[in-house]
Length: 429
Ligand code: HOZ
Image 1 (tube, rainbow, N blue to C red):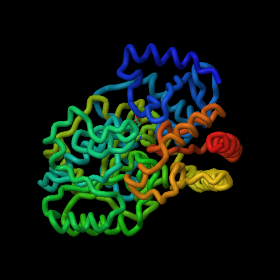
Image 2: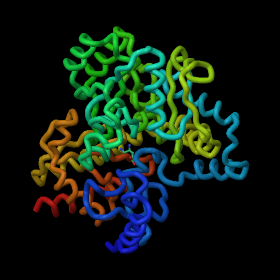
Image 3: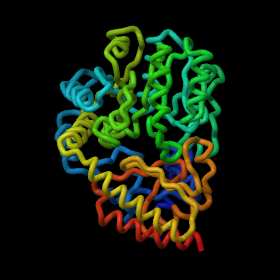
Image 4: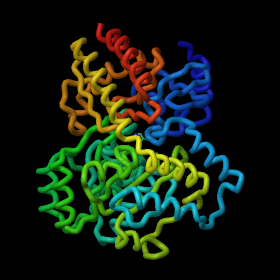
């Protein structure tokens, strides 16, 4: 497969943009080689500037649950753009978006729009601290909540891929109040709350982790987490930037039956445009300025184009829930991959919840950051490129989740399985 145009576009970009990319996760640091540059996309497919076609399992890292360039989303953006793209003044679309979110996500009674998932988690943290009057926060190793200073400790996603456990430029003081615990470890959680529960402002986590590869929570872990945060008056923040509107219409919280105090949203809520949101109990949200004292603001927050794309996406998910179909085809893919890997004696674990999944090159099980890091990343890189050569674009790191869209139907899954059969045979021989 020729990728000469992408290669030279990358060489040029590197002279203009740090590392040639506007976000490290897309630089192929975890698999070597150079990224492909995209020309356009449609449904489940990406087309690069060399004219190659790929089945896309990144979906812009989550937002594209309806597939690329869904007609309803495209029309919504076009119809809105002609009326002006930003006013710095309120619109009725912002209330329409808030109503939709509140109607879909069980725990959200009030919501504030922001411009990215990072902004959403950052603002939720500040609010939790302002609300409780406490400073300590708990996060879990391998969970990634965007590039918020105080959360960039043992973060997953590109921070793992590139072997950067933290980042220069984050002052020690910023992370001094961040406690990092092991995901799915109930005993450590209990011990920490018993020792310092009255100082803990909040716990933030991905209810189903996507940023160390896909890792589901143990049911008991979430239950205990909710009990302890209630008992000690700490705010429970679910980072549903990836899982929101994806694992069910009401996100992971609805699927798993856990009720957070605050939820951070992003990705799908913007339908492919840059959007985030945070919301939760009225009692807490009312503390946000201007109704309360906790400052948070944004020139482009609630931007009409982003609202249009997000509303069109959420309406489609609400009116035509695709979750059974997503499950059916994802199951088909999982079963097929498992059979192929087994027949080739390749040690592997496939973790999957709904339309999010990861194929780990380890005998497993993979339940936390340490067990995820046992994966054979060299094998993953070989697999990634063998799949690319067969027209399948997987997440470019062992420590990221793959995302299916509603356009990933039976034919697409079978195409992917045929590619995987050849790719896995090639790399294991
Ligand atoms: N959370 C996404 C990856 N895990 C974001 C992608 C990015 O960092 O560019």
